[in-house]
Amino acid sequence: MSVLQISEVTKTFSGGTHAVNSFSLDVADGELVCLLGPSGSGKSTLLRMVGGFEQPTSGRITIDGEDVTHLPPERRPTGMVFQSHALWTHMNVFKNLAFGLKLRRMPASEIREKVEAVLELVGLAGYGDRMTTQLSGGQQQRVALARSLVLEPKILLLDEPFASLDQHLRERLREEVRDIQQRLGITTLFVTHGQDEALSMADRIVVMANGKTEQIGRPDVVYRDPKTPFVAGFIGTMNLVEGEVSNGQFTRSGFAFPLPIADGPATLAIRPESLDLTASDASKAKVHRVTDYGSHGLVDLDLADGTRLKSMVAHPDLFQAGQGVDPKPRAVAAYRNNQQIFRS
Amino acid sequence: MTSLTRTRSRIDWSGIAFAIVLTLLIVGPLVVVATWAFTEVWRYPNIIPQKFGFRFWGQTLGRPDVWNALMLSLKLSTVVTLLSALICLPAAYAFARMKFPGRDILFFSFLAGHAFPKFGLLVAIAAIFLQLNLIGTFWGVVLIQLVGTLMFMIWIPVAAFQAVDRRMEEAARDVGASPLRVFWSITLPQAGPTIFAAVLLSFVGTFYETEGAWLIGAPGIRTMPVLMISYINNQMVIQYGAVLSVLLWVPSFIALMFARRVIGGGAFARGFGG
Ligand SMILES: Nc1ncnc2c1ncn2[C@@H]1O[C@H](COP(=O)(O)OP(=O)(O)OP(=O)(O)O)[C@@H](O)[C@H]1O
Ligand SMILES: [Mg+2]
Image 1 (tube, chains in turn cyan, green):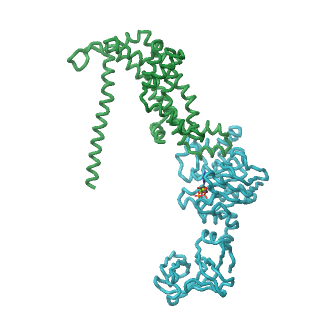
Image 2 (tube, chains in turn cyan, blue; image 1 turned 30 degrees about the vertical axis):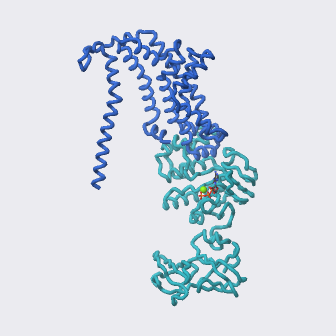
Image 3 (cartoon, protein in one colour; image 1 turned 90 degrees about the vertical axis):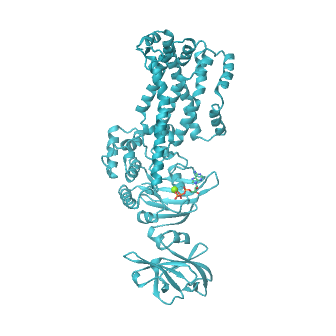
């Protein structure tokens, strides 16, 4: 029912920082889109513009076709969950959740029903009388989520809601949020700089750098087929090797790979799981370290000039530090001038 | 390890000694004054009075000028505190949250008035008030005491407003509250305990304020502290002064009790910690 459209939005702060630069994105009804990017890439700024807390310098934001670009937050059908949860510490849980409903002049009995239902939804039934300071970090974040959900917003905005929680809790809450989001079918924009979070939750991810889109797509597609070297290096672990192509051959310090592209400099991207190793003399590469993770192993190896590569191997006990190996990529992508020019 | 324990225990001892000295310094005079207030006969060289009693209480409280002064002081403190809150709290909010030209200079000027000897300032103001026919009037004293509360009522609330989490306010906007509603339902309650402390301080401070009340108020307006000073100056009976000063503790105690009820000790400390 609810569609979010962001068109050519730019935000320049008074100091001259281009936090968001001509950014466009359409979020479909019921879709969960993750904004992913390094610190300072403009994710929060973008989210805050959708929520109405920042005014775009230029561009348009519409929700279900209605232009909301210049509406204040209280008049937008959006609900935001902040990283710091921002619960009102002078109210108990019930009052935190009821505040927005009261502003909508809903009768008290109906408010009670709704609050209880949403507490149930986030797994906190019976916690209404608690003060927010008497809750654990995970519970506080659930209340913050409930506070937005209870108002049935058209667009749910989450800005790194789990960043302050430990790994274990983060994974659990992530799944819960995904569950709730799908059950309610609520259109969601989710900011994170944890890529595992993005890969596991999102219908689509948007990789941002310097306020611009690097790539938009389904998580598996972005992972398998990164369109720029930045995305290749940012999502998952990736070996990025700079070298020269001549006569259809990519070379870097004794390491060679046939690459059918025009001569010139190129960056070769190889996933550790796509880099096979065979024992050989030490002229091409030497094992630096072997890590055994039980289910698989990771071999760090150095090319002759010291370039470090990682390879994922099934049998780490076959390798030991100092041994010579011959790295053979099974699949690669090649980039030149920030563009992908080859993929196998 | 050993040296650590030794230094720690030494700090503890000096701390205890410090606390004892401080207690003697503060409580000692209070005890002496309180004892005098209930003394009828106390001659040298006895350590405790020969005769206790309420005779001087009866005499003091029997005087109409004492009651008039007490009522006047309460009225003055209330009016001054209310006016001060009305003027200062919005100003403090503006200082804390809004950006406007001249903001820093204005803020500084509020505080600068208190960096100079107060009496000189008072005399200058008195000269102006004389021209305006405000000398010896209730509103003249209100005005002068209002100036005296500005520092508490601006500085502390500014700190309180600045300490309120902006995200909390944004979250309230997000669920549909107008800026005014956010101020009323989120900002004010969050800053509340600290602001209450400032209001209390300004009430008590006004109640005890003497210089301005005397300089501007005399002779028509006589507040409790002014009355007490004139007693001490004009009569050699110690008990009058002692009874009055014990009476003057009453607002302090009431204020402290209020403070403890309305704000827990923790909140008080947190408020000042920012
Ligand atoms: N209010 C502001 N005034 C000036 N510059 C700002 C403001 N808010 C953000 N910026 C700048 O805009 C850029 C983008 O900031 P933003 O907070 O959107 O990054 P982010 O992607 O959310 O980073 P993080 O992952 O660290 O949260 C940064 O360079 C930041 O310094
Ligand atoms: Mg951010």
